[in-house]
Amino acid sequence: MEGPLSGDCPRVSHGDWDTVLEARQIYEAELAAGRLREHGIDAQVIDQSYRQEPVPSVRSFANVRVLVPAERAREARALLAEAAEPPGETESEET
Image 1 (cartoon, rainbow, N blue to C red):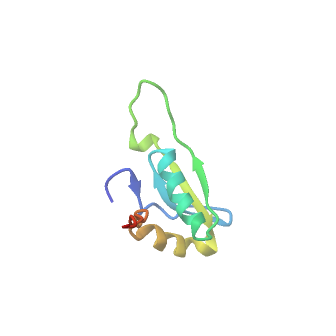
Image 2: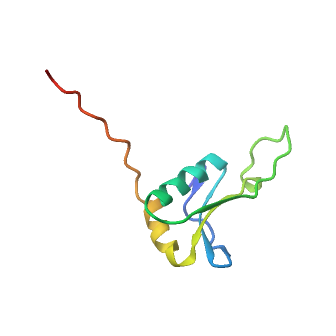
């Protein structure tokens, strides 16, 4: 996938935790981790980005990972692959 989020990230393990997503920015990874947590999947964000100003954001230097327990990795990848539903709009009451 081209763009800031990469769902086809390498299967990197850190002990009992597997990487399910790599992102360019920390906020993107935090949003994904929040979605996983909403569905009962423990998620951690690891920011291994390299920054030195004024170098622009370069993909090879941007390495923010979302990790989940290895036994929930398949479920987490499937959840992140689904399109997120936008927040529901409340219908205004007619009086």
